[in-house]
Length: 99
Image (cartoon, rainbow, N blue to C red; front, side, top):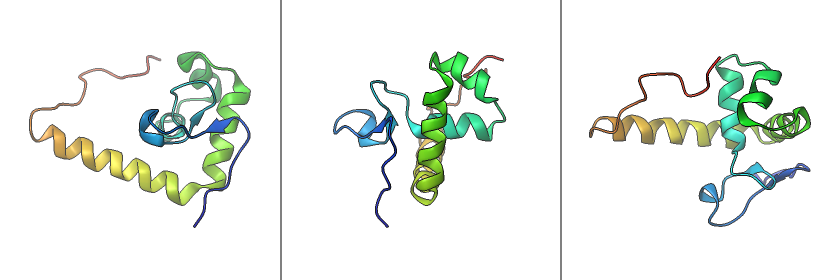
């Protein structure tokens, strides 16, 4: 399955592992999707990441068009984190995005 591009989302070799990011930032689409999955609102996400609503919408649109690839990337990230946590690399004791 090939990637469906969305305006405002870029991939740059060497930036965030080549993962799709909001253009001009290092904010990955997976970061925005994960925040939504954690039930943060669009406004909370925009405020916490210091971006406008349109940029949040671009990330979510990219996700809609490339859901399988983004979900697979999130699973890989989770699996890697779990594997590393068993070697002493632990999860933060507090939430990453303050409410």
